[in-house]
Image (cartoon, rainbow, N blue to C red; front, side, top):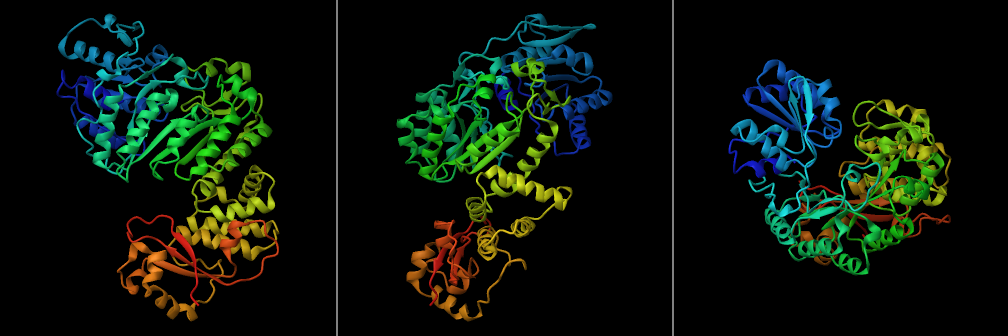
Length: 569
């Protein structure tokens, strides 16, 4: 937002300065930095996650720099400007809604003395003791007139996510979302979008995250963009989109099946699978169609899938949410985000709060505490499950051990996470920080506490997961089978060029003593590759097996290891 405002105004005002701070920085540091800038006007973009800190900051700024003019904009200040300005006397102006044109006209008035405040649409301002609001600002119809927000370059954004939009608005009107306050979708011209994307691709940025509310709202627009990205793929940059899965047709699926693995990430908002809840929030989505499309996308194996759930929706009680959780979990996306409903200012659902008995936090982000369908106690239980889901499932560090646990001992995934949360609280783990290694120990102890059979099999799978994600020595709670007799065999294996070509082609030409620094050989008690193929086997026999882990030649980019069963005979 700030980059749009600066680039839109820079031809008229050359002395605009963009300063970026985070909520993780100390308020005193931010206060000092702005104070020492000796600015005339300071403008803040306001959201639920920064508004509290922003209001505290401007109160202090006005005390030490009374001459400062304070301008606020953004979704968190656009829907109750009179109340906000009455409560916070330090706010001089609020830009309401889409801000580029309003902000430029306000600067023309403040700096050049042009125009009148009452003629600037989309503005709240003070006139003596009164607070005035002008008429609404019409949305910009030609988004192509907006300059590229990164035209000054990407300095300071190295290794950061680059946010980008190819459209504004959303075709849906979900009652919990701010997009429901605006009608229609507007698109940037395709040639402009392609030019912008080429800039990112040539710069080899790590990730471009499209902030379009529903990227595939218009098939021709979205497919043309994705085809362009595919055609100009640099083999490095990743693109993240929020999409509605049930809008993907066969033509789009056929195209997506052929893109490079890792090129695209899709975030898909399921929110709930309860038909009554979907109707109440005005979200006309067919879960059956969504499920079919997600399974198809997953079968390609080339697109990272991130599915969202929201707890606290109308008509969704604890049992109903359990079903929604199971429905989504069983689709096996790479990540599941379990969020909690927030009653945002300006949304229809906030206006309907009494109809559903909503109790929610008074301060941002206005998160729901309870309603007619779910109690605060149940919300707390879901909070614990959300924490464990993040640690164990979303980390992707326990893939094989979780699969084995759930397939063998639980009818539904929610029941496992509920069991694990009860174990977690009984141990008091919620009161302390934990290392990643401890999470493996806790899961092994949980398995033991449940008296599940085949403990050694599970422990070996957990060890496999650990070694896929960690190059450090095995913790003592794992069975570390003696490999002394294998040392010479490992050296001999690495000296055979055929073995390197088959398993470790990145190391062709490397001496064995250098390769061994990048890989690891581990002896397991069972043939884990067979167990991974068929996790529900019960008549397992011991079969010592060596697995080779390859952590990659670049030690600065340690990610999950590739692993292979090898014969060292």
